Image (cartoon, rainbow, N blue to C red; front, side, top):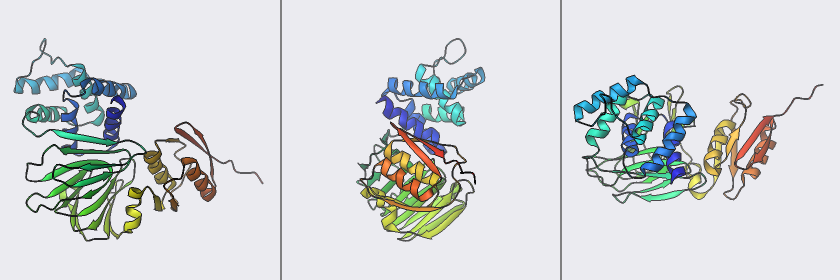
Length: 333
């Protein structure tokens, strides 16, 4: 359970979470269920970042708790270990401490509990949502959803990649929120690729119709089957493209299909699927684009050997779950 929770927190920290997702994650963090495991995971995060809660942080929290009647000690809020490390995570993520904790404390008892599901590296999972909709999640994907959809919408939160088969309900639209992207559907099937380590976020429509919003609704697209919208994180540029559905859904069949991607993007995907960490100089690979297709039973060694032959500029060494990559020295004439 400790590693499971730590992976959830790590996935969250690595992403650029929306305000809504941030609130839901912190509601989950301060819930008493698995409190010891959450504390251990947050302690680990605290140590990794050398974080520090200063007096101004505690005073800020103290003011919030004065408003809602929470206990304090000696004029300054007395924090349990879980609360303390939750504050540490807040500092790391640079979100509004007062607003977030006020939301958690004010709404935790009145709102529907959230369910979190994290798919481990190298695995895939099929999740049945409360409304009967089905979600297939890819490796290292975090999905948050309510135990019951009782509001005006059916809203879920995604960090990673998933395929959604949505039960039709015109009176309660289905919404997927992920980083800068929000996808609204009535009854449809679509794929969302929103891993935090990738430079692109992609929504691909397979059946039905969806609306994709970016930047708080400043940009939106209506997709027809076979279309995809691609969002560039660095530039905020958005493209509407024709999709190859077989390639987009290949991961559900255990296949690896890469088209027009950089080696860095390939390595980021392989990390998710094989639970391996790549260590290499960031300047080793340029932005050249490559096409690869690998069988589901290919080992990481098989894949790295093929990539090495195609690219021809690096060597690699596998040591357990770490792959060391080095550039080849140029021969002198």
